[in-house]
Image 1 (tube, rainbow, N blue to C red):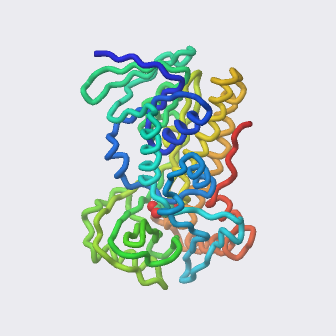
Image 2: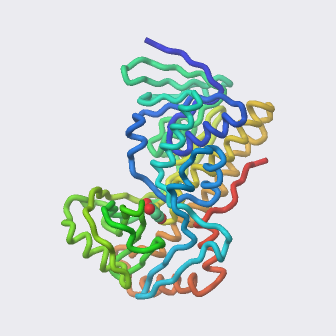
Image 3: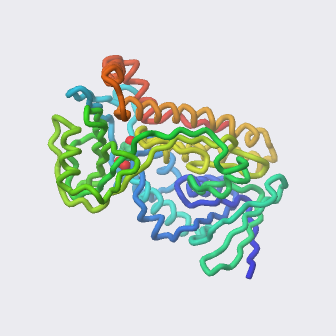
Length: 395
Ligand code: PHB
């Protein structure tokens, strides 16, 4: 059985990039169909990142009058950097007038899915795209299969790959899907979720001789914490007592609130940027286009910045028949992507201990951290990048 559908923009992927794009297009009067291979429950329960830039929060609140970002999310006006037994606060609000919000990605998605469904807009779960055809024509098509194996052919004016790091659309846009700029890191994060109230009002990013640790939060009852580990570490190998000892040793000066650990995972680090973000009538956004290591909290925010730019380019293309902005999309998006790549790489390399680091490397790293915290210019760079640069709209 084959079902044929027609829309203006076919969006592959119902993550933050795909869903925010669908809402921005709807505001401009452009129809879209959003597909995702996962079920609604899977999307709403997968634990991912937690930090939203000020611009992301403002956009979510504007798109969705019922967004819970302000009621459930928690504003943070700074972070703490720890190194050499000291603690230094980076005062985002004082340095930039901006802050960030701790509002987990699955909550953002829960809000955006509910909004799309409540407006009767097309959103299909458990539909897996297998390829995109004819992106060099004005009628590109997404070929997909639904959960019962039925074939779905969606003909559109434009196709967007918002389908994450294993993107199917990337094959067509960027040639071989590996085509791009890569960097691997020799460490990963061991992440836990535990039942205990926050140990610190603000996030603590700590560089210690034993390796990096990050003390984050999820809610008044749940903490999210990470520590640097080997990329091949088995998350089930450590006992709870060993995990607490490891974390505690890496944040001197803070007594961590301990509680039952109910989730543990190992997150590998990668930096990646696809070589091409757009080809003909298809473009990439979010993790399909790039991956950053999590240290700068940029992943979801960068995805939102991509779609702000792409939505206005699609509006020009589809409403005003002006091809200029879509032709400029990749180059403009790349400017922010590489700034975010740099920031994420910089935070990562400044805060982690590379395997085999020499005494020189360690002392230089502490010198680098001191350069940042002791200079208003250094603190301001970190604060501007962390809270997010203004969105480009290409207009
Ligand atoms: C998180 O809470 O999951 C989190 C916070 C800050 C980061 C990365 C992850 O830089």
